[in-house]
Each structure stands twice: as structure tokens, then as C-alpha cells.
Image 1 (tube, helix red, strand yellow):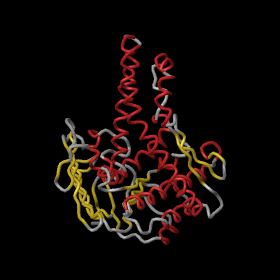
Image 2 (cartoon, one colour):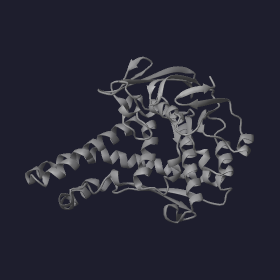
Image 3 (cartoon, one colour):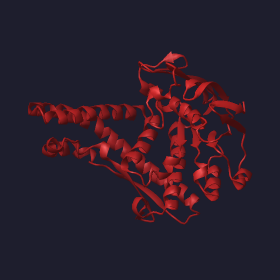
Length: 361
């Protein structure tokens, strides 16, 4: 799988721009706050139908404009495809694949697979559980539309139940309707729990290999799924916690409270790992994500590296780049270490300034 061309109009600080990418390594250079990350963000939007930064759609639209447009041309298993995204300041966004409008956002998932690696991902190991859940969900939603649907429906039911718990404080009679939302949480939450457990088990096998390579065989990294509740016990746990949930006004169990644990040589990396170990573990996660996508789809994803290299020492830069030689990669950076430049070949270079391409083609 490769991306050939990206066109953006009224997106972030870009008025209108076009990029034609090499199937190898593409380098986007520029000072900070010039628009480098926006290019990767627009590409990723065509895979996930959202900003990787969590920005609202209307915030992606250029100042004083009502709409933004993203068009991505790609080749997947020797077949060309076009993804069109129309973002509107008011109203719903429009998504089309090969000029056919999609009725549901979830239908976009899997059209193009991308792995996005940003500086904040280096801290996913030591961050809170929400960041680790987001990592897991981002990967699964691209690979499994059923999972994406179940997760979306679970989150909707969770929101409704959370609102209901607040309302019950003023209207106790509404407690009778709580069971309706608990049933929805179980219906959609159970498959989410099971799919996450399966994914973490597969991930653990691959990250052990990746981390061994990055640490020169000195460390063994493993991952473990830490669910808030087991799938088979979810309904009973919700029933048992009803009194506590009514008293606290909070949803106290379910996939929204899951976590993923990481251990190096048996020690919890989240608590006892050094900063270097945590960063290497995060690198292993991203490299493992690439392998899982290859295995599940029979194709290689596109790798987006957003100024990650500047956060790594030269040794980690070189080991990371050595692991992605066969993958189309788009890298943003303010510059590269001289030793790193000698170790890998750049196929295309773009220079960005004030939301405009002033170099490359």
C-alpha cells in the first residue's frame, strides 16, 4: 500500500497545496509551527476519519473559511483508490471513496492503513490508562470495522448512562431505566473486551521480538491486558455495583476503565522503567503495530513520523529507521543528526514555510 498524492484546501493554515509522494522515505522539513504536522494529520484523517490530535473538525478548517477538503490518492494491492473528505464548519462531514459517498464513517476504516507516531506516543507507557486504551483502539478500529462499531455504540451507551446517573440525583424515579443502558453496555462491551484481550496477546509476542532488537537482546518486553472486568462477569458486576454507581454518579466498571500493562524482565515499566526503557518500549509498540497490520491485511501500512526523530538519540533513530526500510514513510522534522543522515536514504524532500510548499514536488 502506498500513497501517491495528497491535496488539501482550506485545511489548517493551508490555502491550497498538493504533495506527490515517493513510495520510499519522504522527508518534510521546516521550522516549528509552519504546518508540517498538518500534512500528516490530513493523511491520517483519511484512515481514521478524525484528527490524531483530538481536534474538532471545525478547528481543522482554515480561518474565515466554511469548508475544507482533503483528497488522498493511493494504490492498494495494485488498485488505485481516491478518498475525499469534506469538512464543514456547520453540518456533518462528507466522506467518499472512489467517488461513492459513505453512509457511515465506520465504512472508511480499512480503506487505507496508517501508523502515526508522534512525540507524545513516546510517553504512552508512563501516561495514564486512557492513552494506552487510545493506542489499542486506534489500531483495532483500522483493522476491524465490527470492533469500531461496537466501541462506538458502547461509548454512546456509556454517555447516556453517565447522563442518567446525574439526572437520577434529582429524579430518583429514573433509576428504573438504568437497566436499559446496562444491557447496552454489556451487548457492546463484551465483544470489545474479548477483542482487546486477543489483540494484546498478539501484540505481546511481537513486541518481545522488536524490543529485543532495539535493546540489543538485553531486555525482554511483554504486554498484558488489564480489564476492568472480565467479559463473562460484566453483567453481574454492573448489577452488584448499582448502589455505588447511584451514590457516586459514576460508571464504575467496563472497557472504559481498562489498561494495558508492560513489563521488562518481569518489572512493571510504567512504575520502574527508566525514561530510556519507556521510550524504547514505545518504539517497540509502533514497530509491532506495523507487523500486526501486515499480518492482518497482507499489505504494508503507511508510516507517519511526526518529529519523533528529534526526541530520540542517534542510536534509537538509526534502529527505528532500520526497521522501516520496506515501508512508505513520511517524516516531519526540523533537521536530522549528521550520523543519521548517513545511515538512510531519503527519496523525496519537501520544505514547508507558513503553510506553503517551497521545495519538493
